[in-house]
Image (cartoon, rainbow, N blue to C red; front, side):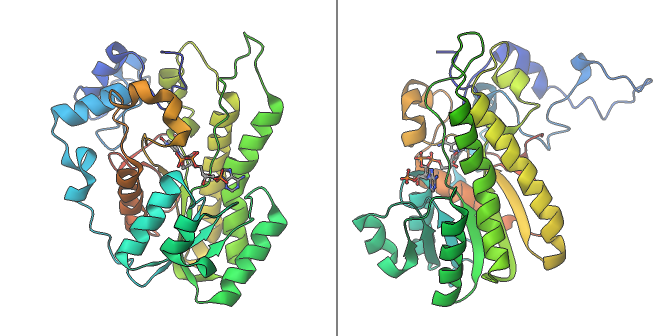
Length: 323
Ligand SMILES: NC(=O)c1ccc[n+]([C@@H]2O[C@H](COP(=O)([O-])OP(=O)(O)OC[C@H]3O[C@@H](n4cnc5c(N)ncnc54)[C@H](OP(=O)(O)O)[C@@H]3O)[C@@H](O)[C@H]2O)c1
């Protein structure tokens, strides 16, 4: 099972144990050349660990409450009374985020392709903007104008809609699927850019609005040599998240002058439809119920601000992920 989309998964523990050693960048180095053996991937503990199994095992060994039980730090912050728009809030992690927003007393607005009775009951049918595919610029722009004309400004947008093509794409078994690659780039890379741009240009955002983009650790180029070591694969999905991250940092730069912050969040490993095919490794890899994943995402989303704008954060441990 080790050929699984390693962005979600385990790699060799052996190569990662060294990552827990004392930060080597704090040592005096006589030469500017730092060998790989000296490289501390955690940069003195400020960055997360690439190997998912090692990361989870370390959290357990350290009894890291922030990692193992988000409720020890999460209190929902100041979202009560705020208007928060969630894309893909009809199922999976997005639905759990929406439920959590309602329980906090926020007004949740959902942008989705298709609604359900459960969703309408939860937030009221007027707060569901359905028939909106995030690859459809016109539909997104129209929906955002309607959100604006329907009510108050949006305090936070959580770009959650995403897609991961099922088969693992490889060059060597001739399974590349360029159509699917473009589809993933369109949904995961361009989708959040479309939504955020529509919100800015329709004047739907409140002052100091927070733009949250749920991305994936799969978008980290640095982590590919651990998570896809000697295998590569999953070209479309991982490229789509790297594109998403690039769009996020560019938005952070462009929108700083407007006072809108942008944060890129890896939501952790969640037990949803997207990962159901990896059920057998859920326990080993520390996959959580999406209700827990929702709190992890909201905890980091609430903390985000103009100081953190443009950062790429792992919601499991609150640490940075390298580009
Ligand atoms: N689960 C994890 O462990 C994990 C890890 C890393 C990152 N993520 C990211 O977290 C987010 C939520 O994941 P999940 O596990 O909840 O996935 P999921 O269960 O597969 O749900 C995906 C959501 O995205 C929506 N969506 C897909 N394509 C869309 C499109 N073209 N336009 C509008 N909406 C679209 C889906 O709507 P429909 O019902 O219309 O299909 C659904 O609401 C995704 O962005 C995913 O990439 C998840």
